[in-house]
Length: 85
Length: 315
Image (cartoon, rainbow over all chains, first blue to last red; front, top):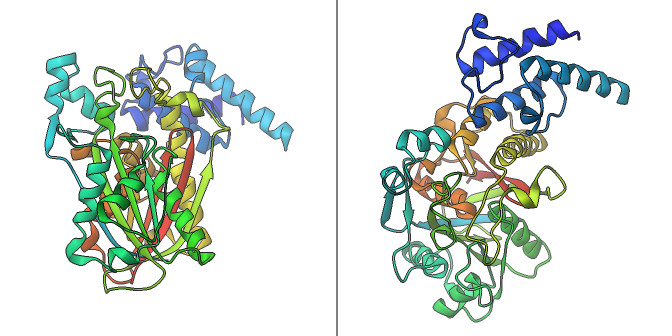
């Protein structure tokens, strides 16, 4: 799965969870910028874990700078999980 | 193993969300948005973990499945004890003069109820006991730092008494079809996420997001596994009782399990997080709703961490 495909899925999850339109999503934004509270962030992480079949620590949201970085992190995790298999 | 009757005791004093706005500036909208809680109950002067457990037992007096003096096992569960030496189980044994019972209390925070059921199952299987009384009681208000803006508004007080035997006693019985518990001290923030330490200003939850994440993950997993193991499809499950930690957690778990609102039994809106007593209180409050052959799953997650589930069937 390439970065663009990951971004498409992340966009779907963010629009569904936060009730915003695709056009409102700027990948330079943080989830908080998009209106997520702390539990929304966790729920989004859980959705991402389920969708991509990877494990994401809850504190990753503090570590990544924005949604772009989160997508890159997911891409890396997917690649590493394939190596493990 | 049969659950013959479950009762509950909820203290009278209501603490509405307005209390937290008046004293700490937290709006009711903020509390509802973070937790779904509109009010919680707390003990009055003279009430404590033990007295609530005793009151819960008294509520069963008119429908006792077996005489109290036939009880041969009393187990208590709480993380908010009135006395850490003479435990809640001993207080009940003393109050009702139950002479021939083994007696002890355990603690595995909010998952304790399922842990106790599993222990009773082992005692029954080894023929060490045949009639058990479980008392689960939380006096969070005695420990809670109510000024803690992160979690001070979450907690409520309450207790439940559960009578269990290895045989049917009435048409109201619930059969325990399966039980599972899982220790999770090795994952996430575990022992640092929620804690209650002596001389350390009450219950603290510095890693609520970590708790949220693992509570959702494991309550879903425990539920799916126990249903799969017992050949019960999710769409045939009649009722689901999640640990009443936070309505955001129960809503998320129910959604991921594709459950309808009518399948999910809760009381957190009115009673807050009553810890290990939360699920048996919900079970008690919905006891008359269950019909023959109904299946019920109780799924819990506790600080520390630990998780568990139980599958019940109305006989």
